Image (cartoon, rainbow, N blue to C red):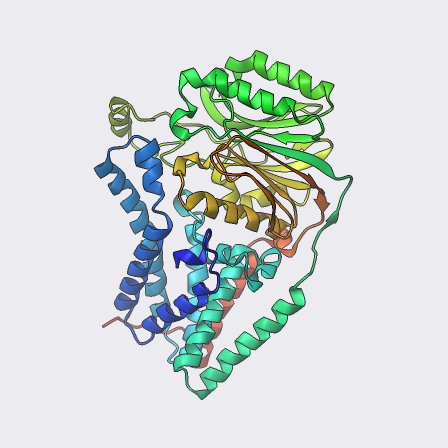
Length: 482
């Protein structure tokens, strides 16, 4: 499954491979379904998220055996979701493969995938819909969101499975699903859900290219400050300049003079600068991962969705003491409050996200349809030269397509990119280098169906599919597994 996602983008693999796993579920007991789903999940998440080891061991400093345990635990947890999918699909027995392949298995997959995106803080990586950003089903993103596209992939897989093993009526049903899907997809192609709003903006995204193993060294601080300032001084034509997450490796109050000088420069040149930096609240003693705007507008956004074991540690005090003794991070960052307002730049409302917040579409949706542009600042340097930055960029592309807006993505080491409302990368910087990515972008207004209704319609359809699957036998039949 992993090659169906970025950077390989073999989107067509997903329905073919899922058709195989659906066939393996046919006729199996609940226990067998759970085991097959579990091992499928182990393979999918081991190959698809191996880069977690790079973050934990290479840059996090955790010893190799413990790093393996940490990464293995997450992989097993993710695989447990697919075990739950297999088991739950076995609870609803219809006695007919059509209902299994076109209702029970697709609907229960989407329910479990949605649950995985928020339960225990959520880990939405490798949701099926993301892999379809370059395929024909991408046109459904602004209508149904990522989970809706996942449902369509599963329905396609179910239709293929019926063509292979179904009875005659089953094959007709499979062909009908594929035909109706193709027609509706063609009708949606080329549809625009949002319209231009106001004048275009010249934007510049600054990438420092500073490797993660050197970023927070004290001796690198002045070099980093000079690098970002000098790159910015060259951008006298840009309306909006964006620096990445924690671009300056210090606390904001420690660099008050530096930030004040930047703000005055931006005002003098009638520009806006958005930059990532850590902030400290002297009143509460809390640290936050923040975005600041400097120039004609001033504002702040505090990251709301923190990374477990990266920005906060849901562990008892004695574990924190162990982390401290091992010279590992152990202090929590405090999440920002819900209900924060969009940032403003040149009169345009910006929907902000920091790091992997752009993987949670419903959180960006909080700023829509008011916001005319999406921005994301991140630091994928934690994952080295792996597939993770490419997967992260793919999710950012999906957010642009879902919302019908440009996404401006500035990162520390790449992949810095400007993404248009169709989810297409129009400008991209090289990884691991100090670069500036510039483009002309058009703020947009209006709401896509997904912005209006969120995941509600897809979850409703999934529930209805499960109910309809039970209709031929008048009720849901719960049977004891052999």
